[in-house]
Amino acid sequence: MRFFTLLPLVAGLSLASTAPAQDADDLIAKYEAEISEKWVSHGGWTLDLDEALARAKKENKLVFAYFTRSYAP
Image 1 (cartoon, rainbow, N blue to C red):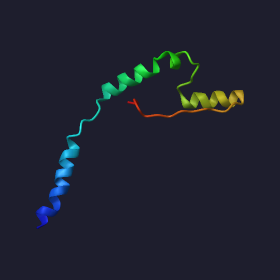
Image 2 (cartoon, rainbow, N blue to C red):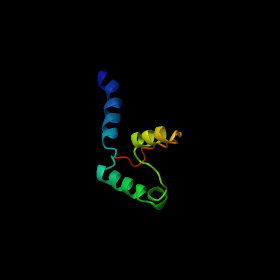
Image 3 (cartoon, rainbow, N blue to C red):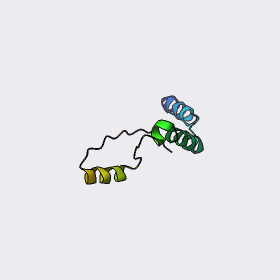
Image 4 (tube, rainbow, N blue to C red):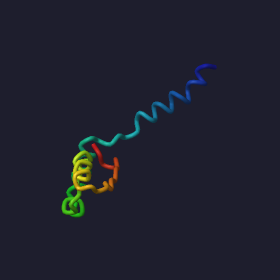
């Protein structure tokens, strides 16, 4: 009886382990493509949070931050 109790768990884990994972190189390529787009590269954006916070403090300004993990390696 114990076999039938564990069977769904084992089946679920085996299916989950076969799910395709995104390749790290693919994620890096997508990230590089995203940050090289004209609106990012010519927008005057600061891509480093610590740098942005230091600059905002120096210029007495607020930081508008947008965080995403869509293509982050």
